[in-house]
Amino acid sequence: MTVSWGRRLVSSALAALSVGVVTHAASVFIFFIAQEYQAAVIGQVSDFYFLATVFSVVLLFVFGIVGGMTRWYTALAAGLFTGIVACLIGTGITTVAGGFALDAETISYLWSTFVSINGVYVVVITVLAATIGRAVYNRIAGGRSAVPVAERRIALVRMPAANLADGQLTHLERSDVDTELADKQWDGYVSALEENGWTTREVGFADSLPDSVFVEDTLVLLGGTAVVTRAGTDSRRGETEAAEETATDLGLTIERIMSPGTLEGGDVLKVGSTLYVGRSSRSNADGIRQLRAIAAPLGYSVVAVPVTRALHLKSTMTALPDGTIIGHPDLVDDPAFFPHFLAVPEREGVAVVALSDDTVLLSSSAPATAALLEDRGYTVVSVDVSEFEKLEGCVTCLSVRVR
Picture 1 (cartoon, rainbow, N blue to C red):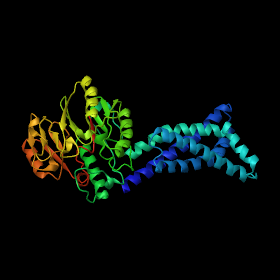
Picture 2 (picture 1 turned 30 degrees about the vertical axis):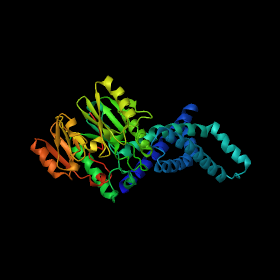
Picture 3 (picture 1 turned 90 degrees about the horizontal axis):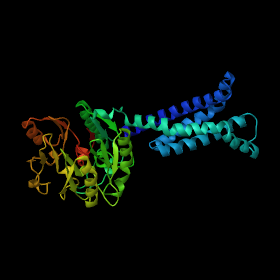
Picture 4 (picture 1 turned 90 degrees about the vertical axis):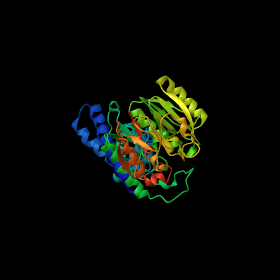
């Protein structure tokens, strides 16, 4: 996927350069201080570290490309490995170029430098890779600046993976997915959020997880609390880690659904202080019990709803800003279950995202539903999400709104 790999290349390069330059400068400065501020030390130590820094940038760039800079522990390991290998190569080249043979004595000398001058470099680059390097990588890969969580108009989104077309299907037959078109549609979706007053924050890119673009399934937001879900299929359980990191960065309190419970965010419809939770193929009874235990002290009640005709509850119904629940009769098991239910004419029209009290986001595949909602006084923002609909996705699946 062109956009994804482009961002990955840029973020990897800038993260590697940032870590390499700062490591070089910090290591030189440490020896400058240690040698009682002797100016001559700056040039000598800088020359000594030059080749190690060049190789460090190259190695960290490679680690970034393969995803080694996305998490603190992989970045820490990448920094440690990079520091050791780059120092061995850099110091080795300098030593051999100085007329020394690459024999056992020289190799012993190279390793001995790790208890002195090269040891400092390794420690510094290990720490900076896990901090500065990871921060630069994730910020640029995400592509948008964070906004203080106090503003509460943040939408978490996640770029489509290159293998998006391999996403799981439960109720639909598989059809061809145009990933390039999906990228453009995702950009249009994000732009629609931003143009209507939402600041987007991208969850770390997951190129090997085809369903990761459906970020709604990873978190359930209850005010200042983020419930980290547990997917109903093993292949999707790797999606929550980066989402939890983003929620933590926003200062949200973290709760978790634990095994044997399963719960996916697409099964949770919040209407005021009521949480309608789909008992679907993806969310089980234990997951609903755990959510009830988490939600009750926060002032929410949980109502379990059977879901047998679609993947998630919000694939069958959502709520307008006034609390009216909309859905398609063919998808909803029992419309009479809800106090205020409005049938919509198109299956693609069951999912809306409330952008404000009088504006909703809707798939462009549902023009008749758009007309119905406009007749009820709502401003409708239509976006094309056809490629995601082929994968049982909808407009709600593509974001988690923090508000």
